[in-house]
Each structure stands twice: as C-alpha cells, then as structure tokens.
Length: 214
Image 1 (spheres, rainbow, N blue to C red):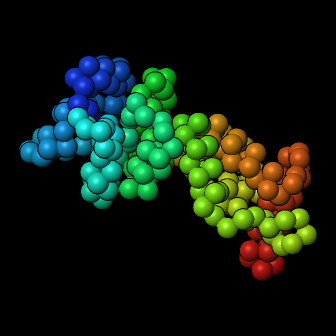
Image 2 (cartoon, rainbow, N blue to C red; image 1 turned 180 degrees about the horizontal axis):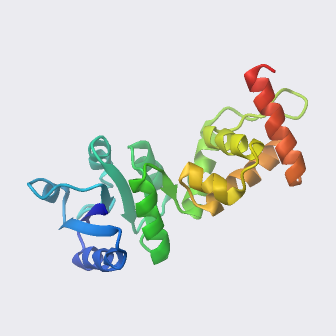
Image 3 (cartoon, rainbow, N blue to C red; image 1 turned 135 degrees about the horizontal axis):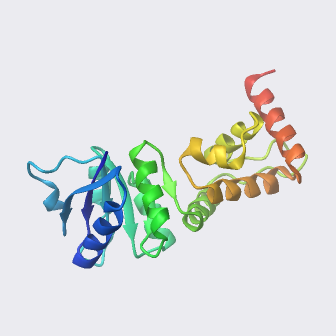
C-alpha cells in the first residue's frame, strides 16, 4: 500500500485527487491539507507527498519542496507548466512534476514511480527540462572535433540501448515515461548524427568502449 499526503490550497483539487487515487487498491490518501503546516502531527505518516507548487501565494513554494524532499518523496502536481517553475521544483529536489491537466492514468503512474524511488516527468515537461539543461551544458563538439557531449540522462539512456533494451524497458528502469525516452533518443540521434536503430546501437557500444578504455 502506497500512503499519500495531498497538499493543495483548493479543496476541490484535494477531494478530486483523493477520489481518483481511491479507485486503486495499492493507493491510499492518508492526509489532506491546504498548507505544509498540515503535514505536522501524529497522522503525518506517508510515502509520497503530492504538493501544489503555488499555495495561496503568487510565489512557488520551492523552499518547501527543498525541505520536504529531504525527508520524503515529493511529487509536484501544479497548474503551472512554465519552464522556470518546472526547473525550480526539480532543482529543489522534487521527485516528479505533473501538470493538473494531465490524464488521470499519468498522475497514477507518477505516484507509483515516485513511490518506488523513480523520477517522473510527463513527456512535454521532460522536453522542457532537457532543453534547459542542454542550454546550460557546454556546447556539443562538432563532427570530427571530438566526441559529442551528452547529458547524464542521455548517457544513461544510451547505455541501456547498448545492452539491447527497448524504449519501454528503458523507461521502466529510468522511472520515466516511454515518451520521455523517445525524446532522449531523438536528441541522442541528432547529437551523434545517426539514423536507424543499428547505427544508434553501434554508437552506444562505441561510447561504452571508449569510456571503459577498451
């Protein structure tokens, strides 16, 4: 049983999330509240915290995310899909981020992934985060000028591909959606300038051999 706390300053959202999660035998909402102060007390025993990013204020509660993520698994469920908000939450330690207009099955998948120790972003949000990380990273090497620079998540994806895993299997191991893995693979192909799956697999094996000094 995954025990869940829901903190949102809108009562309708709190009840709606509880109604949604109550339909699944492995999910149980054990605490609901309008502010992080409601998390204190004898009933504050849960596995995943679903947290709204804006709680009766115009400022995102990134400090609360930072403090709470140190002691529990935090899944942000917010009306905001703005890149700055997504990045602020992730950098503050959130274990996942889903917008409130996401399909019900995606929210359930996010809760289960976060509870199991994974990290979850819906496909569009993953693309936002990856784009920002790429912009902040050193520029990729040009063809013939060395080895293209991949992000840590792209390297992880490529290592699984080298082992022969499908995109769906990679997604389960990384704790993300298959659409997120598809996005990573498209970026990898563009950076490594490869087309089909065979070329991608060869490129993955070559990078692993260089990394391991073989």
